[in-house]
Image (cartoon, rainbow, N blue to C red):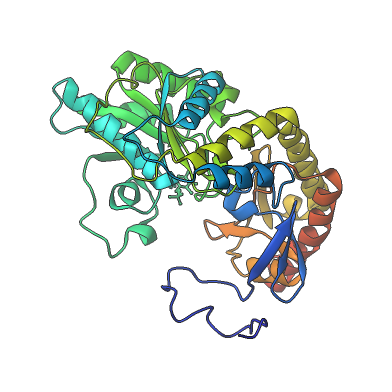
Length: 409
Ligand SMILES: *Cc1c(COP(=O)(O)O)cnc(C)c1O
């Protein structure tokens, strides 16, 4: 087989056509860089969509995983898995919550959260429980989680959708009160502390505190999907911690294993005893390889101060973009540069998915989400020099794109 990837050919007739893939095939990576099969180097500002917390080929993660491979990859949940207990204890300590269920992906973590909320309702006599979800939300692509997701393109063709969701706008406590008034079937509020796929939309601190208070008053579960914004990305372990609140249920995945598939649902006291044996499970969930990836990811993050790095580099990145695109911001061609830590969105005045290919051509991996938002979620090990190199590629690219689109002169 030729190692050259042609721009026109689909990657394989045998891989199901679920992604509109760009014509580049990754061969390997090192730190915040990857190389394609033709030997070309790229800076990675996407991190496998907020997955590669420690970048690529981390010198401490890889040997630990290699050691684990030689010990045991998968045992099974009929027996105790010591590494599960170790990672659970760590997540409990970092979150101030109570216990953890392990699975393998984000949608599975959210699926478990939805089941927890429904059983929470059933246990108190609510036969048709309803969960509050949000405009622009993304929770995954299973039937339950795509029903909780807002984007109608994601839902199209897969009806009937799951019932039992009430949708409200973000950052509007009055709208939440109105939508739930006189509805005794509400059991939970389910939100992303910073919406990812919806365009990097942070929930306001006051709003998060108001929702926490409302959930307490009404005896609802507050369920915060930290699949994308969690695990240090915003500069705290979990993005909701900036608001000084603690949720009742917290799904995690993406960055938790630095690339090894892993998901988790962390539960506080109100949700920790809802499930009992037989209620939920996962064959792969909590397997020793994934657990080791989680344990080592957190150990290295703590040792190397990666929360602080996310805060400092996030500020450096955002400020550099604001400086380089100041005129575009002033003219409104760039509508907003927002985010927290190393979860950054640049919203343009026009749809800009073509920027993904253009950026690739210039040697930088990014994504565009919600049609007009450039999303930057690099590894948390990124350095100032790498951020500067990313900005040096991206800012002129955005400037030229806006000029070509006729948005600016
Ligand atoms: C990516 C994502 C999911 C889905 O995770 P998968 O591992 O792809 O199933 C769910 N919620 C949020 C907030 C996400 O960003």
